[in-house]
Structures are given as C-alpha cells and as structure tokens.
Length: 270
Image (cartoon, rainbow, N blue to C red):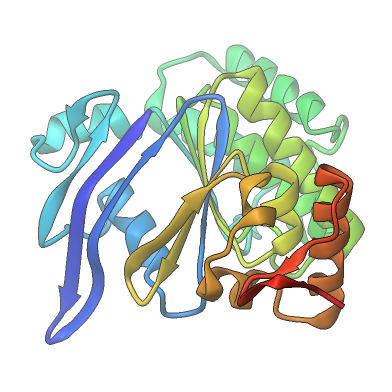
C-alpha cells in the first residue's frame, strides 16, 4: 500500500500539486488521470523520489519514504518496478539482456538463475523464445510486454506505469491493460498507472484519482465514475458525443432507468 498525505509541490511561483492525499492499495490498479499539466507526472515522480515534495508525506506500507535516509530508500526502490512511456529499452542489447539488467544491478545471482528468471517472466508476458531478439525487431506491443517483463523481474511490491498504452492501437492497448491487471492481481502488487486512455480507466480502474489543476478533484472506481455528477470529471472523461452516449447506455444497463441530465435532474438526457 502507498499512502499520499497532503502532497504539495511548486516550481518557483507555479503551484503544481496542492494538498493531494490518496491511498493506493495492493492487488489493485490505481489510476491517476487528468489533463496535460494537471500534475500527474510530478505526483508519480514524488512517489518514487525523483522529485521531493515541498511538504506532505509519501508512505510505503506505513513507512515514510519522504523522511527516509538514502540507504533506506534504496531498499524500497529494489521493490519498485517501472514501465516507462516509451518502454525505454536499450536498443543495443537483446531482450534477454534488457530484462536481466535489474538482476545485474540488484542481485548476486549466478548467470543460470538469472536466465531462468528471465525465461519465467518472458513466458508470463507471452514472449517465449524472443531472448536473442533486439528491440528494433519487435512491434510496439511486444516492446511494452518486454518492458513489463523487466518491471516484474525482481518480483516488485510496487509497479509504476507511465502512459503504458501510448502509441499503441486499441486492440494492443487492451491486451496491455489485461496483462497489467493480471500481474497486479497475481503478484498482489500495488500498481500505479498514469494514463490518458479512457479505455484503461473503464477496464482496469479499481481506484481512480482525478487531478484538476494540481488538486484532487474526484476519487472513485470505474463503476462509480459512470454515475459521477462532477462536471469537470465528466467534461474530461466523456468529452465526445460518442462517449456521452456510451455513458448513458451504461447507466441504463446498470439501473434500468433512463439517465437524467446532471444539470437538470427533472429532464431525461436525449
């Protein structure tokens, strides 16, 4: 579990995060959503210690990461896996070597044990026999799966995913979402996902934190978001007429009633 307590961060006179609090639970996909510039990336960087908050606390299983000494933080970071937006694979080395990179950094395992673990995670992401391929030989979806394999190779307690579906087609995006959800549940990981992908919100959003101009505007799950009457959230999530229609249909399926206009509860939506 990761707990955020009253996180504040500014750069000069510009306030990026203001009094953000949240709890992110193990075994769940915890999503952070919001428009560009809302503070999502800065919040994630505060969580992993790449940026120090001006005030507030980040706690990992009740231990204050914010006030920890460097050595203690290193121990926590060994329990963190990271899936980067562009996968961030090393182009000059093979898939096997990319995945083995964290093992080389943080373990004293012998080579056979490392290879065995690499093969285990490759099998988990359905990429058996790709060991000797180079990133240039992989599709975008395959690169993401290699990124996931590398992120889970150390059996992390925490997994951070920065725009995991960026640049992928809708079908591949759904497969990546499914894989992230599966490994989260299977290994009881506290997974934190920064995303703009509304399909991800609806499919894997066990817990959703919506930021608006650096503040927590709304918090809930992918079921509650359908019925939310928060105007800013609805304008962000259901921006197009198609998505507005989809929301109305989902509400009708869930309640058996004609949905009503959030701004005028006496009138049904068209």
